[in-house]
Amino acid sequence: MHLCSEPRNDFCVGPIVSLTVQEFSIKDLEHFTGIKAHTIRAWEQRYGLLKPRRTSTNIRFYTSDDLKLLLNVSLLNQNGHKISRIAAMTEPEVRVALQELQTETTSEEHWLGMLKISMLNFDEQLFRSVSATFEEKAGLSGLFLRLYLPFMGQIGMLWLTSAICPAHEHFVSNLIRQRLFGAVDDLPPVDPGYHGAVFALFLPEREIHDISLLMVHYLLRNAGYKSLFLGQSVPLEDLTQLDSQFPGVHCVAYCTTYPSEQGVSDYLARVQREATGTSLRFHFAGRVFDGVASPAEGIDLHADGQSLIGALLNH
Image 1: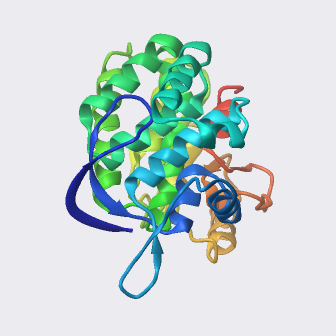
Image 2: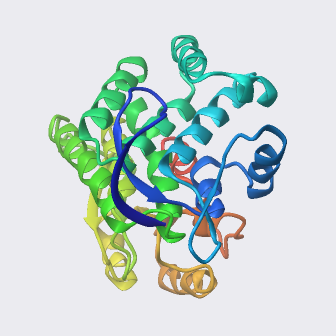
């Protein structure tokens, strides 16, 4: 992805915003929208849906307008509109269809698309507006669990594939961080006589992305559990020291960049060695664990934050 300086009007999910022009590959579009590259090409050829440009070296690229059009198309298509009908729509007709869809449904895909637009444009007002509207529909816990957690999961993938730059991730992460700190501060403290499950939330060494873990922390605290947020780069051996003070403590991590796909087996083997002889239970979430088998009882793996939260709240 490349950033350009020329401003242009956009065709977007939700309100009209002014975007800085960006250049995307077809793989970037796939990562943003979930539509396979071969499907995008087929829609181009059959319906003239997108008209990619070419660089001076004849490399195809797409603009922010193309990305937002594709987000709109994906949303309408997922909600029963045939692609042939969508391709024949005028811009006003698409806007009307999207407005009707917003009235009729609480589809998370709609709101996720709008958050992506706000991120690309560094548009804080749009981000806050989308968040406030969704919170009215789903409540604060719903905002974190159903919108922010999957959003950050998608952002992690976009960051890893270089579809967005670190500045985009930092922009939305800090907006969510502000909301999280306020939400956690508003929660009552855990009762001194608490005897329920205890959760120790940590990030592995070399992992610094903590927003999703902060959301898990809030959701656990809001459900009445004792949650200890330990933060970034926590050595495994330090966690074993919790065993004597909190027997059976649940150690929870949300991983974005570490461990890598190549190193995940070695890391889990280390976890198993450290947990041997203790009552520690480990719970990991992140795309890197998708399809990975747990090496031992007491080590639970989840591909996303929603699955993780569902498991933790059952304790």
